Amino acid sequence: MKTTPATVRPLFLAMVLLIGAMNSITSLADPHDSVRVEAPMAAQGDIFSPGVRGVPATYVEEEFLLSGSATLFTYRNNPPLGPTDLVPQQAAVPFKTRAIVRRPTQPRHFNGAVVIEWWNSTAGFDTAPVWDASADYFTGRGFIYVGITNSTTAIDFLAGGCRLLGVAPPACGTRYQTLSLPENGLAYEMVSQITNLLKSRAAENPIPRRYTVRRTYHAGQSQQGGSVVTYASAFHIPATDGYFIQAAVNPRPINFGINCNAPGAPPFPACTPGLQGADALVRTDLPVPVVQAITETDVAVLFGTSGRQPDTPTYRYYEMAGVAHLTAHKNIELLPAGLLGPDPVFIEDLCARPMNTTADGPVLGSYLLNAMWNNLENQVRRGLPPPSGKLLDTLDERTINRDTFGNARGGLRLPNLDVPVAGYLPTNAVAPNLPSPLQNSARLACTLAGSFTPFDETLLAQLYPSRRQFAKPFFLNTLSLLYRRFLLPEDAIALLQDNLEP
Image (cartoon, rainbow, N blue to C red; front, side, top):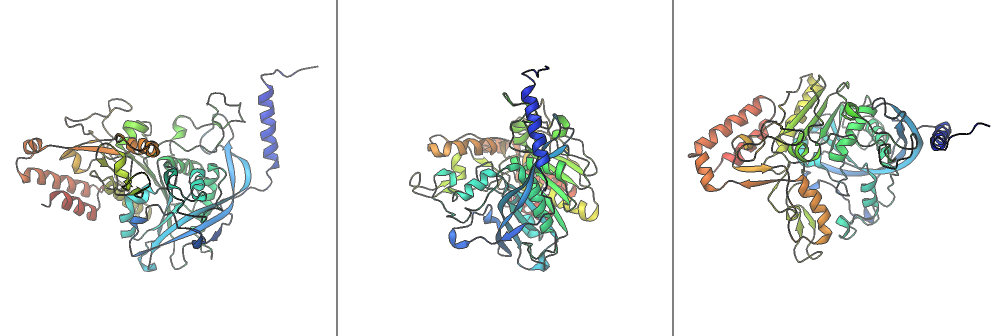
């Protein structure tokens, strides 16, 4: 009698299990499947609204609970034969998430475009880094913004009552206790279903029919920028008109399965393959435009130069000098007074040095991002190709060439870098003597936040003996960015006012 070698049996059994699961899938969910929409029970607790501080009086904010079922996928081969080498792993898995819609109060002020942000969950709860950076642009130009909770981490935070940093009181009560997302991998088809709903004329669309949606853009930063990488490369649907990948390079895993390359991983197909080499980068051959904006922190600390790809007719890659990964606004109260001491805790209290963030500067990467958004809109609406950018000057994969002040050379540069009054670094350090409940959050935030050291009066006098010797090059640098479409007129004016007015 012929026997099966012991080393082959686990692989054989895993294949049998996968084939059995495949054969049992008789009714796959679909990107066009319907989504049930309902309003949350407001009396059950307060809304948890990322970035709410940026919502102007001319906009209305509404929250919706969205439920349906989605398919969970894995890769057919190990290694995968590209990002679209997918096979269903589990069908019709129920989900229930939430979305917040921010729209102009008057339909006539809507420009026809919807930004769908995959909310970031790195902090353990929903944050809105794309909104934080570009809220002024979105609301000033009449976009509708839709933020979607898309991770199990954020769902658990919401369902648990929104205990910020694990120590704050449960501010949301039971408002979100019915939310459920068993697997991050369900988010890809879930968001496709929501996108199709938003672009439809269906009665249940959270966007009223008076607002005619003509364009939808997917956006995300960091982890959820990785979600957009995976989504764009493998799950693109005709309802999507463009992608904006902010401070991200690597794709998010297709599911929660153990990576086949992890130590002790079971044999394929019981493990989950990961994309390799160029397949792990966002596709540059999509039928719609893709913008990828990388910060100095990303190159120096997180990803190195691994995300670099040549521009194509539908792809642009940018590296921003002096711009930090962290987008958060300053003066955000993390914890109220009395919880960990007599004073409230603000986000800038976490770090040892003054923070440099994308949203609040002093190197305002948000201005560069706003211009990229505008260029994306012009490409989709008018066919106008966006400008190409210059890469950071690097000595190796993670070492940036710096000038005598410590500022990065090369890259897409605001005037702060070429007419400097400070040294700007891509990371920060944890403030000493922080209470222990804040240590983990501080390590994360301060690694991602930039820092700056203002020049002393002696150095400033040497560099700029007169006011004109500072103002003229700063003005000309700003004008150059405006001419090259890397700065919008309103942001150019704000930049000059903030730096040149007495």
